[in-house]
Length: 286
Image (cartoon, one colour):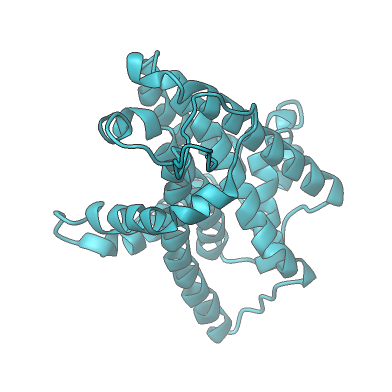
């Protein structure tokens, strides 16, 4: 959008670059972005009985369930780390990615009404989902820290390592991966509505091949012939890296770190390209 000779303040054109992320325009619409974030936070549990308590209930009950099923019944070891804390750490990281993915994947379908009436940078919608889920992630990190310090108080020695400095990078990788995949799926759901159903189903299965309820080392030991499925999954290295820096357990290599970072960037730019191409004419097909 540029100023022209006729005195127009902005010029809106359907012609876009292949990779177009206009930070200046997004900054001009920052108030709208924050309004969407506020809306997302308030309305999700507005008419529920427990309200924001669901932010606390979901990770705690999931960690308890994983502990009972995988560690108590299936006897999957977690080393010196208490199983509940082990599972809660993985679930906290997984939830942020999964919520970014599912929230972004419905962008076009959920906002077709407002997209068809008023102009604003469409990418603001998926970005608002990522920021909203960052708020939820912060709450769940608080739960994780409470459990962490409680276990320390009981006398069990747990300590983070120097990789904790990579914490912001892991958050960015989860956001980019969820945002990129979500934008790709959102673009395709304008024509293929079945994908919106498939996302929830696929996400619930993906958690089991991302080393969330078990250590990667255990898969390599017990099922080496199938371990490659988990090893090549970039989400596995995010979960393992998350546990490694916080609990000092798990497998971390710089090769896996940069592999995951590269996949995150590729998915983000692929999603941005697909999103930009779809927003030009999605209103005709949604």
